[in-house]
Length: 473
Image 1: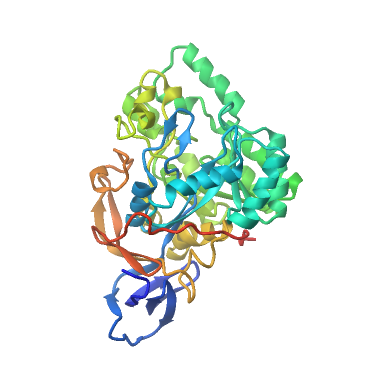
Image 2: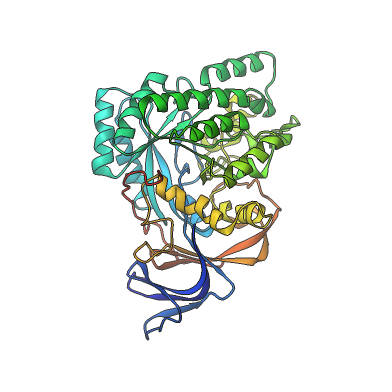
């Protein structure tokens, strides 16, 4: 189906971060062409009756790991399977990660990721670069990437010594330059060297089951690193973005900094809102499903996360979709949780979630009165687009914006089963859970790619989106 096919979405309830009204929306030439009452449909215009449905901007998920090689492992989803799953979940733009290796530059990382993604992606995408080594040449390459490659965000780790971790001076140098150029450094905040010591001590004491993943990554060490990251950003006079915030120990530093006027932004993930650390109260290997970093926290932490989402101390809900199978899959043991059957520290960290983000948040957020519909859209589409230089092309329904549109039915329920999802991952944390709401149709730049259970998209139809400067402050 070509972009020239116009579609008129009639009588839907259009919901953006700020608006809520019933109107007709004409999608033409890949963009939102007209929003009005009672638009006349020409002979070549396909009409879709959206009575009773929400018309939402396509979701923007700024934290996904597709084909990511992390040490000896690789995530289970390809760009093809992961972006197809995203589409069925109502997400039309993802931002993945390009990993700088020991020997190459950020530019090499971008080229490598694009080479793999280009023929596979079924939705639009961009990239953050994971920077593990900083020197003068790397900083030059980062500046080039920002001004010429359309990559304006860079992820750094305070965790995983010897694999990903950067020292404070390297983080500071990146913050200073990237901030001055209008981009964003995203930080994984945990005290990596202390956590490594706790892991070593647990294993020496004979503690090998998955529950010890959580016990060796205490929230205090997330809080300490978050505070340190904020102070580095303050010194660098730069904005900073914290990924996957899980605990009040981290959150309280973010809240304080924002109250002081420091441009600190942060995301949380659906799994921190859906589950708590009670899942670790056993020694079963099945618990490896919940081995993600940071681990799940206490119910009290969840209350603080919801409060922060309401009052804009957290601005984004991203998935951190980092899928590893419970059994050996098509990548073999390289992407299987079974790697850590006898040693929790070898369990690949991560969980799936790319397809269930919108419906799970609608169910636990909107239906339970914790999020307004406008806030729901803001957290899942608009603010991620603004923070990472995609707005207003992505993240809203407005004349001239890309015609990335989701028709969402709030009135039906569905039961989630891994076998019905489109990820290569062989489990979902939501197995058997009944959720209110369902994605009915998804348009990518005006093209119908999801129609109920039917797939009309194709690998390679997604485009790389060049990003501009941060637009959220």
